[in-house]
Length: 507
Image (cartoon, rainbow, N blue to C red; front, side):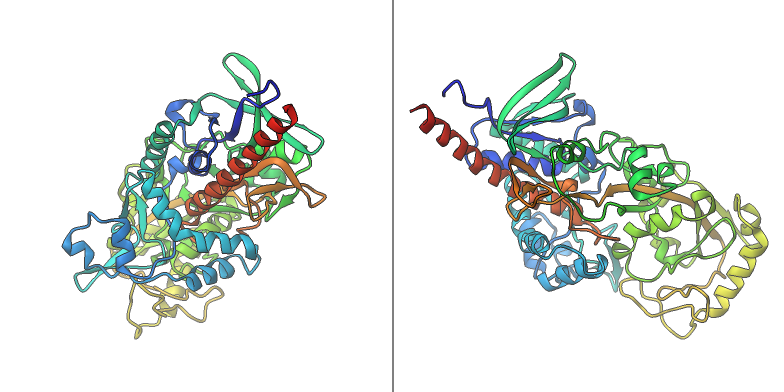
């Protein structure tokens, strides 16, 4: 090695799913020295990935594909109705949820690489299990899956992250915690390392290539208000408190081109009195995603969205915004007793603001900060509008609607007339931001003059152009894995070219 050679082939900035996939892929593709810099301490590692259910959306053609990825299923579990989720389905979901704005080239990489990356993750030690309790309902004694999101990493997000860290360590990836990257080393359009701050002060680390996979700006209240708009500084943060937009700031600071929906984000219904940031001890106990079987009312006692517009997987990521727009930034989800058995497990956790009542009048009186008289009218009008002759079916868009209202309910409209009634207070929980930087189809960051920045790659939430307005549930981890793997491979090959060029220069 000559004196001019960089210390590392690849430096990965970040510590979640995308970063780990990038590091593993770089090693797999010949990078001898790979360093992963995780800003968080070891016991808080993993970024937003640790706070997820570990659910991943991918293309599959039936039960055989599911069993191949989850071979330990019992005979009874193998008889479940897993359905199919084709490339056409995935393309359609991406197009529809993003209002046809998703970048076609990036979308193609995501969709066509989704099945293969699941098998690649399995080779890295990740184990997958069907989400029987969250993504299926039992119909005629058999589990029927819906919504295109069937498998999750065993152990959820923490399980996924732990297995990828174990694999990275075995592969020889050097990992540093409490390593806060503050600056990109760059000159003449080329990135050649980073400046990192740790307990020992600041340090310059030279590298042939750098991969930014350190999340969006969802944990930065000032940036949220700046880019997402008024009121977003009041949102709860579902995940990591360390995703403050540092990678984006560094990239933009050296001329990277902004890309995607900078005023958009993934945001859900969340426990009204949740902590400001995600908590490992609670994780998804704060999420409130069974709203399709409810009516949702604001402080004025009025409905403000179509709870049954689509299956939860295709509306939950945009309805957090709608809740944040309501007076006081909160709402109540109200359920009839005929629906409570369908509620996801987190509704039964201790981390809930819940009201139970035996009459509608009692319920209205108990709901905190709500116009009771208007609420009674809203419920009466809703009950009168429900189609009584259409059967209820939670596994499909059943057409059981409430019609003739200012805001209809398109599916799963169960009347509120069978006590006891349950209501849950919710606010907005932001998951990740959609704005990012433009990358090439090889994962390389592009500058504002539309030229690739030599030595700089991006993956995960930093990739702009995939998601707009909304998001098909469980696509985030898949995207992080696909583009992390891509960036790792590209960076490793580029690092090899730098090494070769350096050797030739010395000669």
